[in-house]
Amino acid sequence: MSEISEPRAALILGHGAGGGVSAPDLLAAREAALQKRIGVALVEQPYRVAGRRSPAPARQLDAAWSAAVTGLLAGPFSGLDPIVGGRSAGARVACRTAASTGAIGVLCLAFPLRPPARAGKPRAASRLAELEAVNVPTLVVQGKSDRFGIPPSGPDRRVITVVGDHSLRSDRQAVTSAVEEWLQQLLTS
Image (cartoon, rainbow, N blue to C red; front, side, top):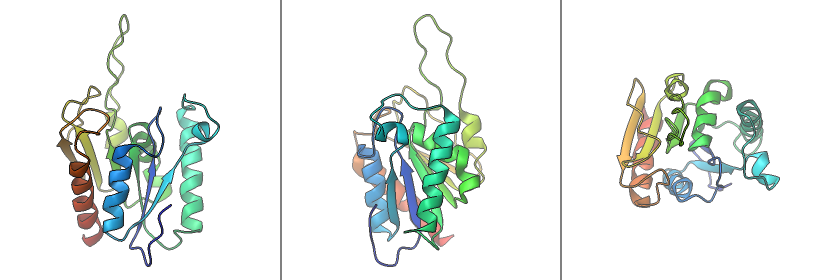
């Protein structure tokens, strides 16, 4: 968690299914938030803390995430408006729980719209409904060549594409700039 004096809001971010909180795009978002005097917490899911690489079922991820957000808002982020988000699977969790956590905004880094087809198996269904269910301002930052696809913009949802793929490693500065601009707009609207 990043400490700043008198933060304007709290940004709480989760990691992707196979990675941790040190992903370059999460660190870029953290940097952007700190520039805007927003407190930041990078939350690691219990399965990762336990040393497992495979994520728990969605209901367990959502419950653990909601408990972490509730704890942060009752403790170090007390009195602050929460902005939730994450990269890939963490973005999905943030979308599914945005209403129940009281989020004022959702930040999705590399939202996995549709998993790539696997040999001999039909392509998985789109996850657009998870984004469509969010009723607060949402930013999606997606790599232009993301094999998971690029979600469409929508009401209260801005989609920005940057050079790169699903990892969002190619242009960290573009990610930082997009997040910083969106945070500024979110907190002044």
